[in-house]
Image (cartoon, rainbow, N blue to C red; front, top):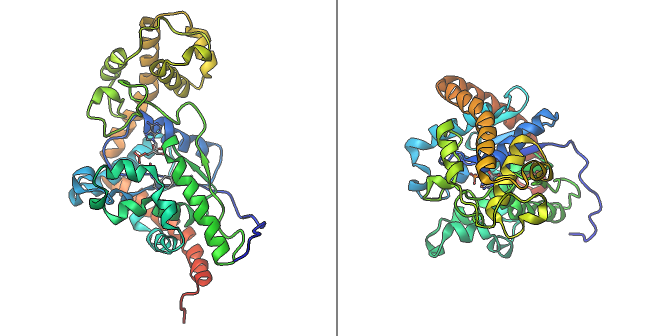
Length: 350
Ligand code: AMP
Ligand code: TRP
């Protein structure tokens, strides 16, 4: 092991990300992740987008639906990828469990990552709750599998929401430690999170200090990707604001107003207008003006996606073709990398 690892990764750049096949996607998933996936594809990046079903089984059956539902949830997320604009000819779309490299590299990384690093992960503490002793070992080592997902493809850039920042830091630590431990400077890239933008942290419509989440018991707290126009308008109308008056006209005026900041951020993420521009346009006006405008923008953007989603979902054979083709292409990238990893680790080969 050396201390100086100046040699940095110099291979090709690649984008990797994944979403779990649990429950319905909401606006936070769309703006924090999916929309960015599409934007990166359109910018010409080499993109690999995974449905992370191995991650889904880290929590009990009632969370992810059990064996009867997991494959159908995988098809749902794959359909959402396609409906949002991911083109399976340009990007790779596949199910994690269909490519063996994830599990194999995760094991090797379990032996590279240190207990102390993984114990710091706040998502484990949140998900395990009070009774961490009863959580699965898989839930504990979940972020190590996530590092393996990314690095099995030597991915350099990872679009995710803000909540994944800590996991990405762990991925970088694991990549760096592997490179040092196996005396392979620059073998794995240190993957960079792509988190920027107003969509990175979408908050609950009922509480501007809590993130929008599929586990919130109130459906009014989130916009689901399958909500129709009426429901979206109703949820925006009922979204919490505050008693501090009309819309502010600059970003300073958003301080201490998390609900308003969230709605403005959503508008900005959806329309592509900067937060400043949105405030300039609506500053001084009441929510009776801004909220309908926000609902309209949301419906205009989401309705075609929802319609495509339903269409794609109605043809499971086509989704399965996309997933099978994606798995073969993903495996063709990961298999030679795993071959090198095995050599570096020193496993037997005839
Ligand atoms: P999950 O559904 O937890 O697998 O999340 C899938 C992706 O959506 C990840 O990149 C998350 O960071 C992102 N995400 C989830 N909730 C939010 C949110 N409220 N705001 C922004 N991004 C989110
Ligand atoms: N942990 C991510 C989430 O909860 C999902 C995920 C698994 C992921 N593997 C990944 C995201 C690799 C980015 C890259 O949202």
